[in-house]
Image (tube, rainbow over all chains, first blue to last red; front, side):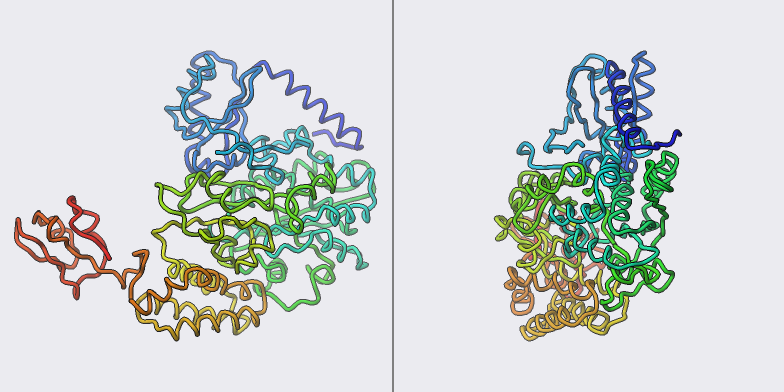
Length: 125
Length: 488
């Protein structure tokens, strides 16, 4: 990992990272909540099921893990960002529902049950 | 849910970035706050900005963070420490764990900012060993931050250096108190000591030390980047910014919420929290864990900030909110929390060690129907005396659950000692299970499930419960298909 030697390098790195993320924006992005609680309620199974299903359907999907999505009542949860669309968070998943999520929403853009409304404003630096 | 009641500052990245990849944090504006401090601000300016923002400690009593930093900056020393208090111990509170698991770098960055401000160069995170995933992610974060050069020697080409390590706690509630925490970090018994000297003067290894809570720290990079005026424009006159609460108990949307200070209890419970489970009536919410107290259905219009919670005999604490409905007995709840502190008291000072035991015994007596009005008076007197005399925050706040429940539910206490009844139907010693003659069809199911064989009656005849032998387990009530058994 290259060291950041100046403040200008930090800012440059950020721009580069944002640019790289932009370059990937043509692909669906699946963000799986994997904090202690999400893992305990089956988050890893959901991730594995979605990866397997995406491969089976030949879909090019980017997967990432994150921490707590703050909606414990709906764990396991994943956030799906389709190209050109706002992120949508789906909750109450299990391996079976996760497969359906890939088949319906990621493949065809068709919403399924379990959408968690966005009740917050997030501060972005 | 009403739209956008929540504002996420401390939890701005949790659930959005990959906590095991520093690039993910940097892309989200990570380490820009530290860069701004190192590149554009003197340590004094950082402290002034913190003071102007109005941020207060998110872990307990709400001491102004900038003032704390200012004290530590004043003392000259070759070494000064920044300690992150990640000893989250309130039953039902898990916001610190969520932040550490979801956004560990925000805490590291803030610790470096704190060290720069006070003229220190060492940091320690004190975390419970029972948070393995948070520890793993912190370790990864520290490793990556060192590799990237945002922690370590001559950070980003400046002459500021900062090193970090992690200390593990064994999970004692009292170690969340800063002096007990420092004792524990030094390898001593986790007992608090009398202040002064305050840690800012002589703390960890007798060096000037600032101890800050995880949530406080996580907010700091945002405050530095967006400025004091932005932050103090959110919240109330005396409580600025947002607070993370962990909603638990009988509420629909169990989870973490981050809301501006000054939001009403009504909005938190009914809107953000989605209301009480199963359509039951809201009765009370325990805020601040065992050190806090109950806000009740009468307090729904209370604006949540540090001062108004104290006015209700509660406190902000770390932000646990345990919601209770009409089926919860307030005396039993107070007993539950006092039992917790009784077990967690370190035993150093008498008011806390013996006082907690006496309070617990009095509450136990009341829930068993053996209390008197005199006991209630004694309980009040004792509670106030402990508040005034205990050594540390744990003891001083331990009677809060009793005082705050008495504030609104004294009638429930009275019902337990005068009528020998538990209005919520929780305290089993005060309950009677009775067969409703008109509904009983004589199926014998209750008699068969009764573990002490105290239900008599022939097939197709009304059954009778022998009250003297009944152990009030409720097995018959659960099994009866005809609603022919009631408890009262």
